[in-house]
Image 1 (cartoon, rainbow, N blue to C red):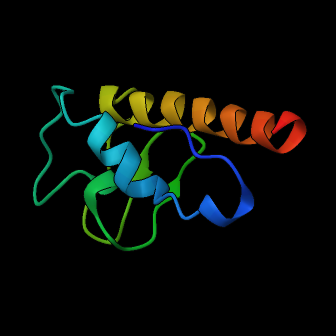
Image 2 (image 1 turned 120 degrees about the vertical axis):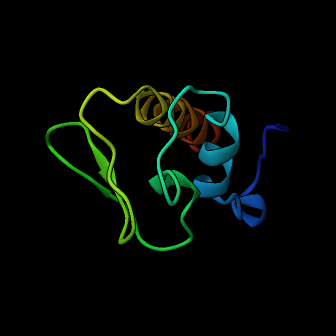
Length: 84
């Protein structure tokens, strides 16, 4: 994934990026994992992730990947704003 710089390039679709980055996890939910849903997401205090169609269990590996990846993207975004 290319690193984007400049305010005009901040059209990164975070949900699509997280979905792709966590696709190799072992989690299989039906009808889908919440991160692949195009609807709104909710991250719960018990570390579960849910959409209107599915909910992960606390400790779900794919949800953990998404949280880790989103923190990394946030740090990159902050660095670009600060130093870019």
